[in-house]
Length: 212
Image 1 (cartoon, rainbow, N blue to C red):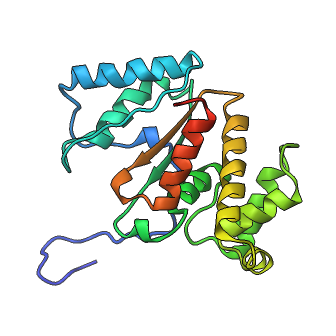
Image 2 (tube, rainbow, N blue to C red; image 1 turned 60 degrees about the horizontal axis):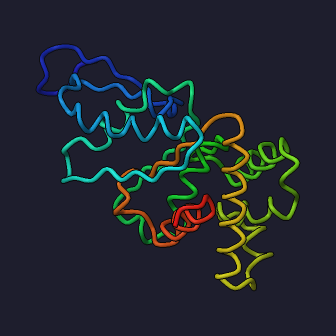
């Protein structure tokens, strides 16, 4: 196909969907060099997680210095040994309650942007039916978390603090279930953009695991 002001032919491509890839399978155009000390520090913490310990790790630095790249490179050798849930935060995400938490759970539930409410409900029901730890009432709160109309209507009179406590407990229970098969790593990328409720959940989760 010819394009104005471009002498050579251009081959057009149609975007038909998002490719499902592991967060640790990102392709980078440049080699990873240096950062031996930082890489070693992250992997030391990951080794402790693999051994069954709980760890909180913060990777800080100016924008563009390679924090996300460091995390990916550090965890690549452990891809088959760990269960990774990754939430990528964006500008203005802090205005949406539970945004980071739903990003974490969407990955596990197989929920994608663009799914219809019916598809989201079906995926939630199918996923939770695998586990005896969750019942129909739990499903209702997960549906609320994903803003499905039926749950929003049924739980509209429940005080926010009660909703938060219930959802925090559900997510904590789910994480415990997931960690039975493999050690679990929960990552929030660009944490400075995370919403306040999701930050509160992380503090709750850390306390539930025994962190003082």
